[in-house]
Length: 449
Image 1 (cartoon, rainbow, N blue to C red):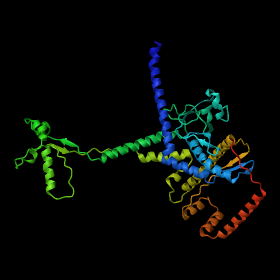
Image 2: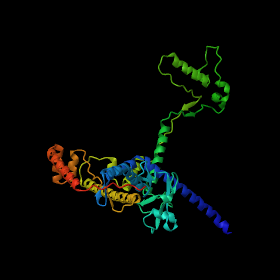
Image 3: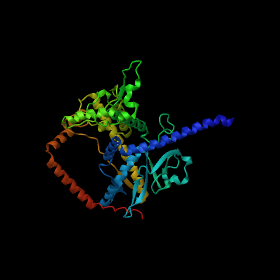
Image 4: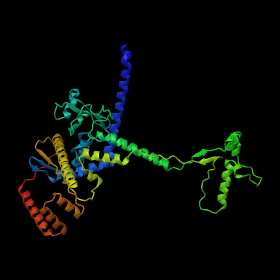
């Protein structure tokens, strides 16, 4: 009796869990597709990377500036690592990285490529001891777990830098759509609906633009007539046999079968000179061409696309006007407030991202070189978009530029301060040369063997 009551319920639960697991696997592949190939997200990633890494990576060891050769090493190997780390922070919520050796014997960091692992979250008390070193703190309640899918690495060889705190079973049991744990999980449902709507619209457009011959049969019969004589084109295969010839007098056009009517029509075209000989389709008797049914998709693709772009910008911390392009509208108080708010929010988000990258670089440097006194600095590029003189006027009216800044920028545009700039540059170069002579250059830090 117990099995009869709980057996079907258990089967339903297993089927539901199987569907959830399939949805989570699909969402993970969809998330990787978004992070690698989707144009809007790629544009946001490039904006973030250019804003955070345009000034380069500044490094000091024991309070001294590193040698130029080591700075070149950082620019060559650590800058691509930072770009991949920024993408991992926004896509996974954490940065899985490991160290590898290059030909010269140096160790460099590498973010695990997309598709080489899957991830999930679980309580920390279930974690095995060999994975505890992946985290800085052993007292975390929920942690990320990796499952290697490709590549020659093990889970215990991977370091994890947490950007977004992990959650437990929040998205896996969603009533809307079971998704993998990710800061971009909300985009998956909207992106899937948008793509399916675009595909259905393309199918409808292909149907509407493809030539089709649709006929209607309207026989002109009386009650006592035999219907088979009005369908002589379909009665027997002898009606499709070509005429053997001999008699030059042809019966009326309606009395011929399908093959004969097509021959008569082609002969009429061939008797008149023309550069175009169309294909002829002779309809059976009592058949007329019907109007093709037109498919009209009901999805509002424009609304779905705009919503998707707004959500992408909101989750990645990029102002929407940077994706849509600057709109040259009339200046109003609302536009002024939106411009100020979006600029400040974007600057704050980029500064926060730079802080995370700096902490990650410090952990990487300690793991490779065993040095404690190291400082990394990333200076984000301030957001200042000037495309025309009207943009300067807009910035001045919203209070983003002081009168002194406006005067200095006007002189720069007019070319009136080149002499002073050259003198200032010479003075800076001379002072920096004197400081370099008085200050001992730090030695380049060598990696471990």
